[in-house]
Length: 105
Image 1 (tube, rainbow, N blue to C red):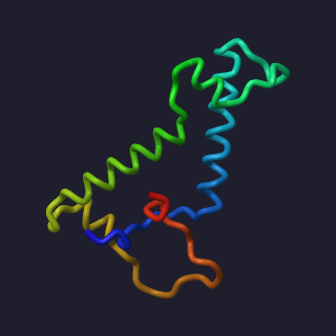
Image 2 (cartoon, helix red, strand yellow):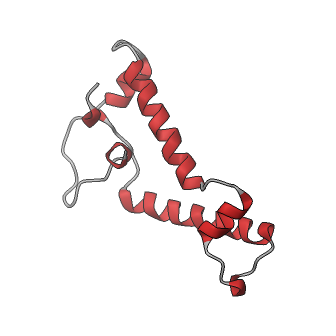
Image 3 (cartoon, rainbow, N blue to C red):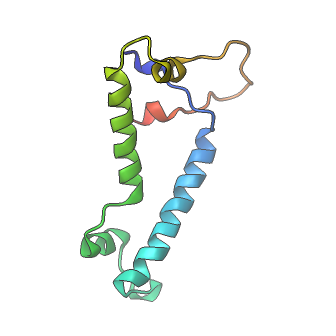
């Protein structure tokens, strides 16, 4: 399957903002769970290692990899693969092209 047929409706800026807030709120939950405050100056990686938890962004990346591999195994006539490879026709807006999640794999 061609990896250039990925399409995602959200812009790269919106994805970065949502990942930042997801990461922020994840640590806001994990820090008190580990018994630390911001004044303890413990790094996020230290807290995750202590709690033996993988980061949510790592889990999202793993999910995307698995989904992409699943789509690659599909026959060409399947609807999910067709919708994944669909490219809308027409003119794009001016400016920098939107970043697709497939480009981050």
